[in-house]
Amino acid sequence: MTEQPALSKTQLLEALRSGERELVDKLSGLPPDAFERERYENGWNGREILAHVASLEWTYPRLLDIPKQGASPGATESRPESSSPPARSVRGGIGSYNERQVEKRAGASVADLLAEFQKNRAATIAAVEQADEALLATPITSAGGITGPLARVVYLIAVMHVQGHVNDIVAT
Image (cartoon, rainbow, N blue to C red; front, top):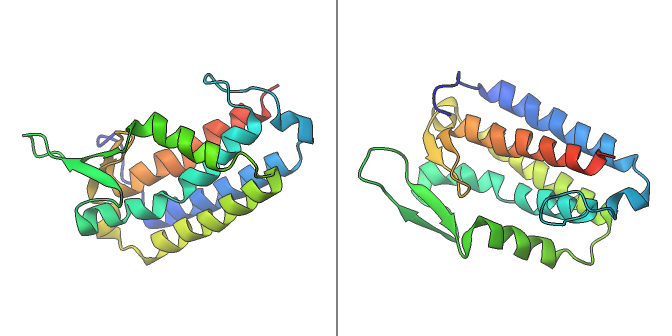
């Protein structure tokens, strides 16, 4: 991941904004039954995938705190003997975290989940707007094990990961 070209703040912000528009446009137009079909390898249906996306969006502004504070909230830190950035892990592992977040939103409607995603995406965009280029160039390791400059890690999980899940939901 660190071999890839740097991603500027402007590029990251545009990708975050266009990713939000794409998600809302694609998912708002789906019929309700499209969210009830199983779409994912763990058996999640479209609504559960959206719950995953909405809940994870909350974590992205916290990625910007990793280089500032040296650790993320609720995470443990371990530093291998190399000079790579600290690895982050979540209680019970990333899969367990994802399951807990989806379960918390079991009663949420698609409209509620879209609203939660948009609220959390606004916080992600605000956090990136406040960051400087030096912070965005700082190497980190996410809880999911993605390593690289902060802007690239945010792009890979907040844009590309989300886009993959939107495609999972709209797939027929």
